[in-house]
Image (cartoon, rainbow, N blue to C red; front, top):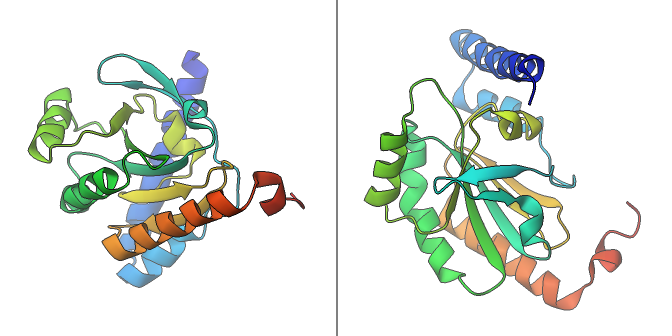
Length: 196
């Protein structure tokens, strides 16, 4: 990545954060902020591709999971809501382990988070699904993330079918995964997305 691209990406992230804080300061309610942050919803869109590093320095592209149902959770160890939902994500990942359902945690970069905090978070919540680090913030920008936690569900055809801004609840996540598993067994991708 060139220095120019890094600067542009950093500016986009900073402008998004500044806009969010400005609107928060204007007195928008949590509901209004939620509506604003989901107005840039990617539901129905093909998931943008990425290739990110694990903590073990292994590069993992999204394409590794083609044909699988993918739960993408954007988080950071300094995010309180992210810490609250961590046990739920871990437990749900175990519930669906071996069912063509992949959980990926993408750590959103901040100036405050450190490798130690990330490792402490993983250890504290006994997270055993894959954690990817978006060091340069490119994936965060590509997915339009302006608030965390944010969870996206990608179907076996690679399309985003669900988005939750803020903490996700177990029933919503579980029901959505089950319906996608049923759909995967019943329909081929070209039967679902014929007009796209």
